[in-house]
Image 1 (cartoon, rainbow, N blue to C red):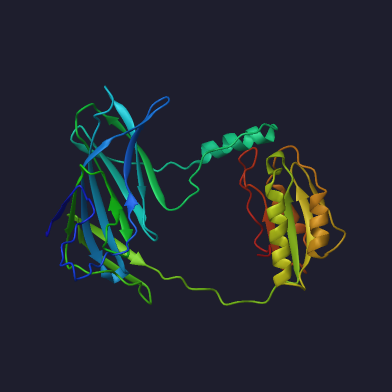
Image 2: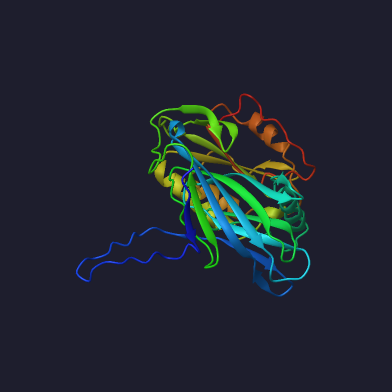
Length: 336
């Protein structure tokens, strides 16, 4: 191991002759924060130490990086919960998070935000205005950690993968930052031209990793006939309709010969158009629809089975949540 200790991670001071210019690297840095949120206040939780362990995996064009944090609750008496906010560089992905409690490491369990979505959906079905908070900006990892005891150092750690070995993070002036490289150091790992895999020891444990490059699908001709399946339940009403209509216009501009057939469904289903028409004709029909009631997704397979053989593609517009949590199977012969 070759540790590099950067006390405080403060900007480096360069000393040079007055006649010799100093090059300052233009690298974007990401501020790491730990906060306690009271009823009307937000107090920072002190990060005493941040230790990075960088392990390159050139076979898959990535680096596995472990960040260990030591934090201290010196702002509030008693046990509190603190929220870690870690902005990540583009392309970085968090793989794992653990918190040390009673001398044992406990992994964080990812929980799907389905419950919140169901509450919002049911409230909208009843005609009530409600919204749910969600991550909308950038690549940011957030997690709430508890308990943080008063004046007792607590430890947590996370793993993330990235193609670069740099650790472009900013901490407080009192934070000691340590960077260690395990194995052969490399400036960066370039994406591989083809699939790759590796098996090896990292951080004292055996790891397997694989890389599958993106392979674009060969372009095909535009469909001549498209069926539009439109959810008319109460939760679908809103300002987003204009954006959907604009998307249809953009599609029609790229595929001028495509014709659209409109179906609506909620607690019942109905064919709104007498036959395939232009995008503007479809938008005129969709703009006249009324939104009320719940969603019966079992109607979707029935609509697909009733489509004629001339239908080459289907566009389904729905929030995807059935009132009775039913998950119907699509018929094998349905168009894409």
